[in-house]
Every structure is written in C-alpha cells, then in structure tokens.
Length: 112
Length: 111
Image (cartoon, rainbow over all chains, first blue to last red; front, side, top):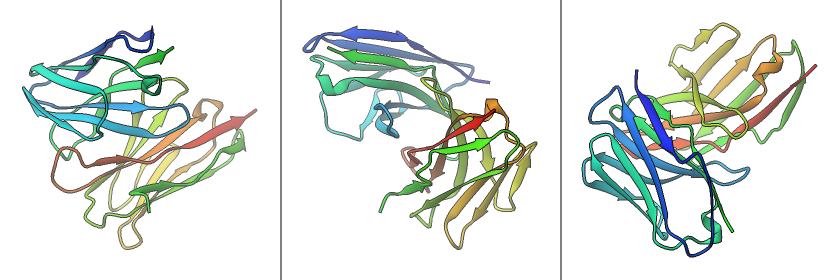
C-alpha cells in the first residue's frame, strides 16, 4: 500500500516570507498527486493536481505554485505568504481517476 | 447549488445510538462515492466506499440512490471513538481533478 510523507508538520511564517511544503509518495508509481487546503471549520479546497512529472494544473488563482520534479514528489511553494494562506495543507495521492484518494498527515501553516 | 452537500450537523448523540448522515450530489455523471472520516486536526481517512447495491462494514452501512442522487451513511451502536467529522466524497467522470468533497458533518458521541 502507498505511504505519503509530508513535511514540515507545523510551521509559523511571517507575512511576505517564502514557503515550501514537500510531499513524497512510497509504494506506488505514476500516481495522480494533489494539494488541498482546509481552512478552519471549512471543507477541502483543491489547489493543484498533477498527473505526471512536470504536469501541474491549478484550480484556484493565488500566490501559491506547485511543482512535480519527480514521479513521487510534489512541492507546494510561495514566494510571499499572505495572512489568508494560513490553513491545513494536505498532500494526496490517487492511482487513476476511479480509485480512492489517500492523504498525507498534513501541514499546519500559520502566517503571522 | 454546491456540487456535494451534506447534513449541516453537528450531531450530538448518546453512546449506543443509531445515527444517519445524508449527502446529495449535483453531477448525475458521478461514478464513484466514498465516505471519509476526519479526526480533529488530522488528515481525512477512508472509511468506506459506497457501492450501488449498498454495503456494510461492521456497524457502518452505506447506501447509494442514483435516481435521487444521494448517498447515506448509517452508524449503529455508536461508540465514543466514532466522534469525528464525516466527509462525503464524489468522483465525477473522467479527469483526475473530479473528486469533490462535502464540507463534512461533525458527530459527537456522548457518554
């Protein structure tokens, strides 16, 4: 079964600072990879998804970006964080469009 | 109308009670359905898939009504450990992106 590693687990960053969240997947190959954000008390918002190396689709225009330099690595970045970027960020992996999705343990970001 | 809508909740029930959650979806072409459980400040975890004929896993029963476009989750003999937020998830046809999450229903099982 696949395992999703996500880090860092928690971070507090000042407004205007850069961000890098990393996600790696083990136990599978060529997965679809996703970044979600969950604001406090709200549902999951899809930010980016990728069907292969170098292929990124953005769902919501914002100051975040994503990259997939390797098959099982997905990175979420920002050059300058906003207060509104605070939230719970989840990396997820899915094999094919019909299968279930599995999540990493998440990263709690607080922008101050 | 939201693509996936769930009971607003929260549900506060006594231990041993039976509780049911409903979820409606707007895309009639949706192909697969799931219930996820999310504990406080944790990632969502798959609880069960939902099959057309309905399916059961211990105390949990999931049902799908394609004609009315809703799915349900029934929890019997509630345990304190069932306290969590339950997310309805709908997979549309085709592309990788079409997995839509409901906003979740919070359940608290009281002693």
